[in-house]
Length: 165
Image (cartoon, rainbow, N blue to C red; front, side):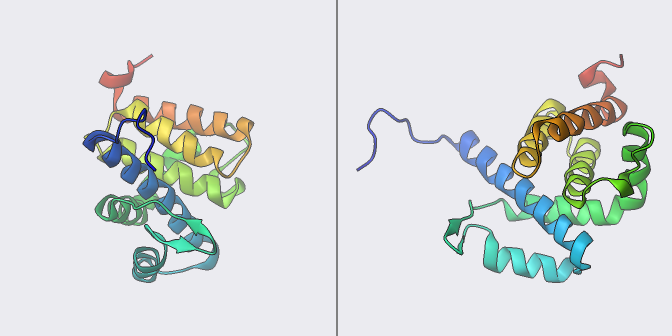
């Protein structure tokens, strides 16, 4: 029976949840591409037919906004040579992108792509969402690093929104 004290999700909340699910799926897809060398078309087919909105091995995956998922994954793949140096510059000295965990590379690349290209989403929302995604995989110290790196990149791409300082 439905809980009468709980309001149904409104259209903005549903869209946010579907976008959050798309971000998580995009990070997982980018990770899989990095680790296993899977191609983008195979990744799209696998995630859209087997993962997004389905139950897999007892876990139910939220329905995701497929177009948003595709945009983030294809955008990162297309712009990776441009994004990686920006991320490297924002990372602490002595910790180049190639040295950090593959899952964190995926989170940072997706977040950097979205900060540069998805102006329809507020920058602080982008950062918060990717910190939440990182939190599903790594400890608090590493999520702090994700926050700091994406904040620095956000200031580069959206100085007016973040303040330049």
